[in-house]
Image 1: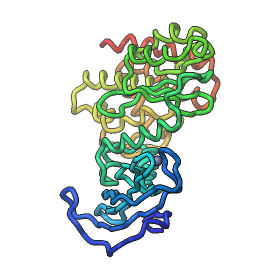
Image 2: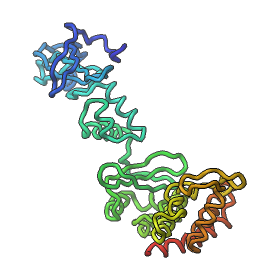
Image 3: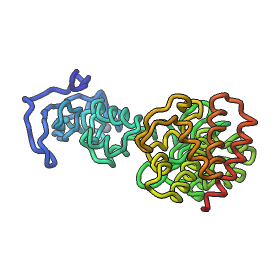
Image 4: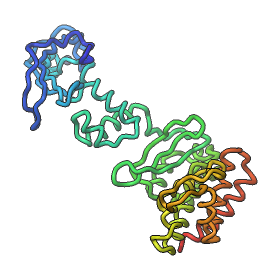
Length: 349
Ligand SMILES: [Zn+2]
């Protein structure tokens, strides 16, 4: 049970020992697997099966200490006398011709659900980065992520950094399920991929929600002739906050580094991203950055007075936070988009 072995045909043949494997000391268990097959997997012959030596493989197992665990597994081979094909004993503990046990694969997949990097997972389970990727890919293949027959009504697009390059992901906006992950996010790659879906399938798509600065936004009408483009909320929030930070940094560049405003904006930049109502307005507290007692509201106001554009950006952000809270979309969104336009024009500073 400790080793997650459920196959009663795996029989240990000696005590575990410490052995050097691929440059590290590992705990190694020796076992045999002699499962007689019911019939020849090639021709279905029931009777003419003879033992035909062993296949020995070194299978990575779950490890319960810092050192890796391996099972040196001898699998009985069989030969069919009728069709002369050779095959090995099978077990659900490890796939044929694989050296990674099923529990390790499951643990890798489980970890892959978290926000951990491939190399972190690889180190934890004593495998190569590429192996982690392969296990994930093999799992994805089983879930038919490569189908080209169906698209949801509401598509959601995003990009993320998977390896050194940016990857593209699309999902079902209603069911919150992943549709596919592509290794590239170029317009060309996306064209090629989505053109694999029949036009009649693409015509069913009603909305595509994506990042504001997605480079492929111009492709949408071509690929999905009936779809509306929706800039999703998370991305708006992200863009407005990035814009606000950029303006803040610009304002800071115009100030002497020793000034109290500079030090406040540098040290307490997070207060600019909070809702205005959350800031301390009446009780002065000691702020290390400026070196005296003051309310946060007064300090923020002092910084906003430095530059009218900074004030505009900040107000756009606060309006947006307000929409987020009150969920009164239209009026607020309009204001935010207006402010956003101003901000994006200023990005060329
Ligand atoms: Zn056969």
